[in-house]
Amino acid sequence: MVGLVPAIFVSKSIFGMEKSAHARHKADMNKDNQDQAKAETRQLRSYGRRKGKRLSPRKKRLITDLLPRLRPDLESKPPSDLRTLFSGPVREVWLEIGFGSGEHLLWQAERHPDIGFIGCEPFINGVAALLGGIEDRSLKTVHVHDGDARDMLSWLPDNALNRVFILFPDPWPKKRQQKRRLVSRELVTELARVIAPGGELRFASDDTDYAGQALLTVKRSDAFAWLASRAADWRDRPADLVPTRYEQKALSGLKPVYLRWQRL
Ligand SMILES: C[S@@+](CC[C@H](N)C(=O)[O-])C[C@H]1O[C@@H](n2cnc3c(N)ncnc32)[C@H](O)[C@@H]1O
Image (tube, rainbow, N blue to C red; front, top):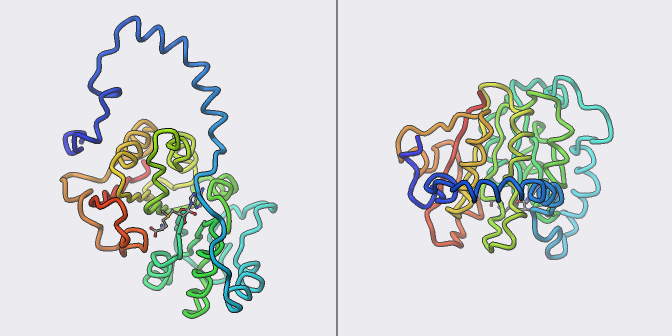
Protein backbone atom coordinates (compact mmCIF):
# COMPACT_ATOMS: atom_id res chain seq x y z
CA MET A 1 0.00 0.00 0.00
CA VAL A 2 2.87 2.30 0.80
CA GLY A 3 3.86 1.99 -2.86
CA LEU A 4 0.88 4.18 -3.66
CA VAL A 5 2.09 6.96 -1.47
CA PRO A 6 3.87 9.84 -3.17
CA ALA A 7 7.45 10.46 -2.06
CA ILE A 8 6.46 13.46 0.04
CA PHE A 9 4.26 11.18 2.14
CA VAL A 10 7.10 8.89 3.06
CA SER A 11 8.96 10.67 5.77
CA LYS A 12 12.64 9.68 5.82
CA SER A 13 12.71 9.75 9.58
CA ILE A 14 10.10 7.01 9.67
CA PHE A 15 10.68 4.69 6.72
CA GLY A 16 13.97 5.55 5.05
CA MET A 17 16.51 5.88 7.84
CA GLU A 18 18.11 2.97 9.71
CA LYS A 19 18.59 4.14 13.28
CA SER A 20 22.07 3.66 14.66
CA ALA A 21 22.45 2.13 18.15
CA HIS A 22 23.46 5.55 19.42
CA ALA A 23 20.38 7.16 17.94
CA ARG A 24 18.22 4.41 19.42
CA HIS A 25 19.72 4.98 22.87
CA LYS A 26 19.20 8.70 22.57
CA ALA A 27 15.62 8.12 21.45
CA ASP A 28 15.01 5.94 24.53
CA MET A 29 16.48 8.58 26.80
CA ASN A 30 14.19 11.21 25.31
CA LYS A 31 11.04 9.11 25.38
CA ASP A 32 9.85 10.26 28.80
CA ASN A 33 10.34 13.88 27.85
CA GLN A 34 8.46 13.35 24.59
CA ASP A 35 5.56 11.65 26.36
CA GLN A 36 5.41 14.54 28.79
CA ALA A 37 5.40 17.06 25.92
CA LYS A 38 2.65 15.12 24.14
CA ALA A 39 0.49 15.14 27.26
CA GLU A 40 0.93 18.89 27.45
CA THR A 41 0.03 19.50 23.81
CA ARG A 42 -2.96 17.15 23.78
CA GLN A 43 -5.43 19.86 24.68
CA LEU A 44 -3.97 22.58 22.43
CA ARG A 45 -6.53 24.45 20.37
CA SER A 46 -6.74 23.00 16.90
CA TYR A 47 -8.92 25.83 15.61
CA GLY A 48 -8.40 29.53 14.99
CA ARG A 49 -10.97 32.19 15.77
CA ARG A 50 -14.33 31.36 17.36
CA LYS A 51 -16.09 34.52 16.17
CA GLY A 52 -16.05 36.42 12.90
CA LYS A 53 -18.14 39.33 11.75
CA ARG A 54 -21.29 40.43 13.58
CA LEU A 55 -24.21 38.04 13.21
CA SER A 56 -27.38 39.13 11.40
CA PRO A 57 -30.59 39.28 13.49
CA ARG A 58 -31.72 36.01 11.91
CA LYS A 59 -28.47 34.26 12.80
CA LYS A 60 -28.64 35.61 16.35
CA ARG A 61 -32.14 34.17 16.63
CA LEU A 62 -30.95 30.80 15.32
CA ILE A 63 -28.15 30.71 17.89
CA THR A 64 -30.53 31.66 20.71
CA ASP A 65 -33.56 29.57 19.74
CA LEU A 66 -32.58 26.71 17.44
CA LEU A 67 -29.08 25.80 18.65
CA PRO A 68 -30.14 24.84 22.21
CA ARG A 69 -32.65 22.39 20.70
CA LEU A 70 -30.04 20.74 18.48
CA ARG A 71 -27.10 20.73 20.89
CA PRO A 72 -26.51 17.37 22.62
CA ASP A 73 -26.16 17.81 26.37
CA LEU A 74 -22.63 16.63 27.08
CA GLU A 75 -23.28 16.95 30.81
CA SER A 76 -25.83 14.14 30.69
CA LYS A 77 -25.16 10.46 30.08
CA PRO A 78 -25.12 9.61 26.35
CA PRO A 79 -27.81 7.21 25.12
CA SER A 80 -26.38 3.71 24.74
CA ASP A 81 -27.88 3.64 21.23
CA LEU A 82 -26.90 7.00 19.76
CA ARG A 83 -29.59 6.74 17.09
CA THR A 84 -32.19 7.47 19.80
CA LEU A 85 -30.76 10.99 20.07
CA PHE A 86 -32.74 11.83 16.94
CA SER A 87 -36.47 12.54 16.97
CA GLY A 88 -37.19 10.17 14.05
CA PRO A 89 -35.77 6.78 13.14
CA VAL A 90 -32.25 6.84 11.67
CA ARG A 91 -30.23 3.93 10.37
CA GLU A 92 -26.76 5.18 11.29
CA VAL A 93 -25.05 8.22 12.78
CA TRP A 94 -22.39 10.17 10.87
CA LEU A 95 -20.27 12.95 12.34
CA GLU A 96 -18.42 15.85 10.75
CA ILE A 97 -15.54 17.49 12.59
CA GLY A 98 -14.99 21.14 11.63
CA PHE A 99 -17.90 21.60 9.22
CA GLY A 100 -16.98 25.25 8.54
CA SER A 101 -20.17 26.83 7.20
CA GLY A 102 -21.86 23.45 6.87
CA GLU A 103 -22.24 23.12 3.09
CA HIS A 104 -20.99 19.55 3.04
CA LEU A 105 -23.04 18.52 6.07
CA LEU A 106 -26.23 19.97 4.57
CA TRP A 107 -25.48 18.28 1.25
CA GLN A 108 -25.07 14.91 2.97
CA ALA A 109 -28.14 15.38 5.20
CA GLU A 110 -30.34 16.20 2.20
CA ARG A 111 -29.15 13.11 0.34
CA HIS A 112 -29.36 10.75 3.29
CA PRO A 113 -32.63 11.32 5.17
CA ASP A 114 -32.20 7.96 6.92
CA ILE A 115 -28.91 9.02 8.57
CA GLY A 116 -28.55 11.05 11.77
CA PHE A 117 -25.81 13.70 11.60
CA ILE A 118 -23.77 15.41 14.27
CA GLY A 119 -21.71 18.42 13.26
CA CYS A 120 -18.97 19.87 15.45
CA GLU A 121 -17.63 23.37 14.88
CA PRO A 122 -16.42 26.01 17.36
CA PHE A 123 -16.61 28.92 14.84
CA ILE A 124 -19.93 30.51 15.76
CA ASN A 125 -20.50 32.21 12.40
CA GLY A 126 -20.14 28.79 10.75
CA VAL A 127 -22.56 27.28 13.25
CA ALA A 128 -25.07 30.05 12.48
CA ALA A 129 -24.70 29.38 8.74
CA LEU A 130 -25.39 25.67 9.26
CA LEU A 131 -28.43 26.47 11.42
CA GLY A 132 -29.77 28.68 8.62
CA GLY A 133 -29.43 25.78 6.21
CA ILE A 134 -31.12 23.39 8.62
CA GLU A 135 -34.04 25.78 9.04
CA ASP A 136 -34.37 26.49 5.30
CA ARG A 137 -34.51 22.75 4.55
CA SER A 138 -36.58 21.80 7.62
CA LEU A 139 -34.01 19.13 8.45
CA LYS A 140 -34.78 17.01 11.50
CA THR A 141 -31.73 14.78 11.37
CA VAL A 142 -28.91 17.14 12.36
CA HIS A 143 -27.48 17.81 15.81
CA VAL A 144 -24.86 20.47 16.40
CA HIS A 145 -22.04 20.71 18.91
CA ASP A 146 -20.76 24.30 18.85
CA GLY A 147 -17.39 23.48 20.36
CA ASP A 148 -14.38 21.23 20.20
CA ALA A 149 -15.15 17.90 18.51
CA ARG A 150 -12.84 16.17 20.97
CA ASP A 151 -15.33 16.91 23.76
CA MET A 152 -18.09 15.34 21.67
CA LEU A 153 -15.97 12.29 20.88
CA SER A 154 -15.14 11.64 24.52
CA TRP A 155 -18.88 11.82 25.36
CA LEU A 156 -19.89 9.27 22.73
CA PRO A 157 -20.40 5.60 23.59
CA ASP A 158 -18.24 2.94 21.93
CA ASN A 159 -19.11 2.03 18.30
CA ALA A 160 -21.64 4.88 18.09
CA LEU A 161 -20.70 6.20 14.65
CA ASN A 162 -20.64 4.72 11.17
CA ARG A 163 -18.87 7.55 9.38
CA VAL A 164 -16.66 10.46 10.39
CA PHE A 165 -15.59 13.30 8.08
CA ILE A 166 -12.58 15.51 8.70
CA LEU A 167 -12.49 17.73 5.63
CA PHE A 168 -9.73 20.27 5.22
CA PRO A 169 -8.81 20.58 8.89
CA ASP A 170 -6.77 23.68 9.74
CA PRO A 171 -3.37 22.78 8.26
CA TRP A 172 -1.15 24.66 10.75
CA PRO A 173 1.67 24.54 8.18
CA LYS A 174 4.42 26.26 10.19
CA LYS A 175 6.67 23.81 11.99
CA ARG A 176 6.11 25.39 15.41
CA GLN A 177 2.31 25.24 14.94
CA GLN A 178 2.04 21.64 13.78
CA LYS A 179 1.36 20.36 17.29
CA ARG A 180 -2.03 22.10 16.96
CA ARG A 181 -3.10 19.82 14.13
CA LEU A 182 -6.28 17.98 14.98
CA VAL A 183 -5.22 14.58 13.70
CA SER A 184 -3.01 13.05 16.37
CA ARG A 185 -2.42 9.66 17.92
CA GLU A 186 -4.90 10.51 20.69
CA LEU A 187 -7.62 11.55 18.22
CA VAL A 188 -7.19 8.39 16.17
CA THR A 189 -7.44 6.25 19.34
CA GLU A 190 -10.69 8.00 20.21
CA LEU A 191 -12.01 7.61 16.66
CA ALA A 192 -11.20 3.90 16.77
CA ARG A 193 -13.30 3.64 19.92
CA VAL A 194 -16.36 5.47 18.59
CA ILE A 195 -16.44 4.23 14.99
CA ALA A 196 -18.16 0.85 14.69
CA PRO A 197 -16.37 -1.97 12.85
CA GLY A 198 -17.03 -1.55 9.13
CA GLY A 199 -17.54 2.21 9.60
CA GLU A 200 -15.52 4.80 7.68
CA LEU A 201 -13.16 7.62 8.47
CA ARG A 202 -12.72 10.23 5.75
CA PHE A 203 -10.09 12.94 5.55
CA ALA A 204 -9.23 15.51 2.91
CA SER A 205 -6.50 18.11 2.83
CA ASP A 206 -4.58 20.22 0.36
CA ASP A 207 -1.61 20.19 2.73
CA THR A 208 0.32 17.15 1.60
CA ASP A 209 2.52 17.18 4.68
CA TYR A 210 -0.57 16.99 6.90
CA ALA A 211 -2.13 14.29 4.69
CA GLY A 212 1.08 12.26 4.99
CA GLN A 213 1.08 12.71 8.74
CA ALA A 214 -2.58 11.64 8.94
CA LEU A 215 -1.86 8.59 6.82
CA LEU A 216 0.99 7.48 9.06
CA THR A 217 -0.86 8.25 12.29
CA VAL A 218 -3.89 6.20 11.28
CA LYS A 219 -1.68 3.41 9.95
CA ARG A 220 0.12 3.14 13.28
CA SER A 221 -3.15 2.63 15.16
CA ASP A 222 -3.80 -0.70 13.42
CA ALA A 223 -7.53 -0.06 13.86
CA PHE A 224 -8.22 1.07 10.29
CA ALA A 225 -7.55 -0.21 6.78
CA TRP A 226 -6.75 2.40 4.14
CA LEU A 227 -9.26 2.07 1.32
CA ALA A 228 -6.95 2.73 -1.57
CA SER A 229 -5.87 0.27 -4.18
CA ARG A 230 -4.77 2.72 -6.90
CA ALA A 231 -3.60 6.31 -7.01
CA ALA A 232 -6.98 7.62 -8.21
CA ASP A 233 -8.45 6.48 -4.90
CA TRP A 234 -6.65 9.26 -3.04
CA ARG A 235 -6.08 11.70 -5.91
CA ASP A 236 -9.71 12.07 -7.01
CA ARG A 237 -12.53 13.40 -4.87
CA PRO A 238 -14.97 10.58 -4.07
CA ALA A 239 -18.22 11.05 -5.99
CA ASP A 240 -20.17 11.21 -2.73
CA LEU A 241 -18.22 14.21 -1.41
CA VAL A 242 -19.15 17.75 -2.41
CA PRO A 243 -16.32 20.31 -2.73
CA THR A 244 -16.24 22.26 0.51
CA ARG A 245 -15.90 26.02 0.79
CA TYR A 246 -12.30 25.71 1.95
CA GLU A 247 -11.50 23.33 -0.90
CA GLN A 248 -12.93 25.78 -3.42
CA LYS A 249 -10.68 28.55 -2.11
CA ALA A 250 -7.69 26.32 -3.06
CA LEU A 251 -5.44 28.40 -0.83
CA SER A 252 -2.39 26.16 -1.06
CA GLY A 253 -2.58 25.90 -4.84
CA LEU A 254 -2.02 22.15 -4.45
CA LYS A 255 -4.37 19.38 -5.47
CA PRO A 256 -6.13 17.93 -2.43
CA VAL A 257 -5.62 14.41 -1.17
CA TYR A 258 -8.69 12.36 -0.19
CA LEU A 259 -8.18 9.54 2.28
CA ARG A 260 -10.69 6.89 3.36
CA TRP A 261 -10.21 4.20 5.96
CA GLN A 262 -12.44 1.40 7.13
CA ARG A 263 -12.65 0.58 10.84
CA LEU A 264 -11.48 -3.00 11.24
C1 LIG B 1 -9.90 25.06 7.32
S1 LIG B 1 -11.49 25.01 8.00
C2 LIG B 1 -12.38 23.92 6.90
C3 LIG B 1 -13.86 23.99 7.07
C4 LIG B 1 -14.67 23.03 6.19
N1 LIG B 1 -14.44 21.66 6.57
C5 LIG B 1 -14.35 23.24 4.75
O1 LIG B 1 -13.66 22.37 4.16
O2 LIG B 1 -14.76 24.28 4.17
C6 LIG B 1 -11.26 23.95 9.42
C7 LIG B 1 -12.42 24.05 10.37
O3 LIG B 1 -12.23 23.11 11.42
C8 LIG B 1 -12.68 23.69 12.63
N2 LIG B 1 -12.02 22.99 13.74
C9 LIG B 1 -10.72 23.04 14.06
N3 LIG B 1 -10.49 22.31 15.17
C10 LIG B 1 -11.67 21.77 15.54
C11 LIG B 1 -12.08 20.94 16.60
N4 LIG B 1 -11.21 20.53 17.53
N5 LIG B 1 -13.37 20.58 16.67
C12 LIG B 1 -14.26 21.01 15.74
N6 LIG B 1 -13.93 21.80 14.71
C13 LIG B 1 -12.66 22.19 14.62
C14 LIG B 1 -12.29 25.16 12.49
O4 LIG B 1 -13.03 26.01 13.33
C15 LIG B 1 -12.57 25.41 11.02
O5 LIG B 1 -13.88 25.88 10.80
